[in-house]
Amino acid sequence: MDIELKLIRNTLIIRLKGEFDMLKAEKIRRQIDERLQDDQVRNLVFNLEKVSFVDSSGLGVIIGRYKKVKEKDGNMYIVGAQPVVKKILVLSGINKLVPLFKNEQEIMKV
Image (tube, rainbow, N blue to C red; front, side, top):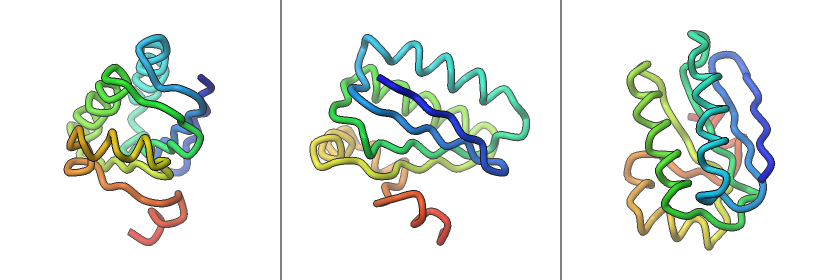
């Protein structure tokens, strides 16, 4: 799995590629948490356009980062989830906590 972290103003954009599973979840969590320690980071965007699969470990990383962002009074969004990944997000109920958008540009309208 590839991860790209990009800070724009106070929003950390996390672009993932590949399978977001047990084998990669811990490494991704550590990288994101390291960046969340920066007081400038208040919001998170998980870009899942190039993610082909998410398991419970990946969902756990998403939920855990949601809690951390809420502690900072920030917001979190998920963008670009492909149909299989989107189905997992909906079945898990994450979409009730974290809004889903088609792409990063849609978030700019919020």
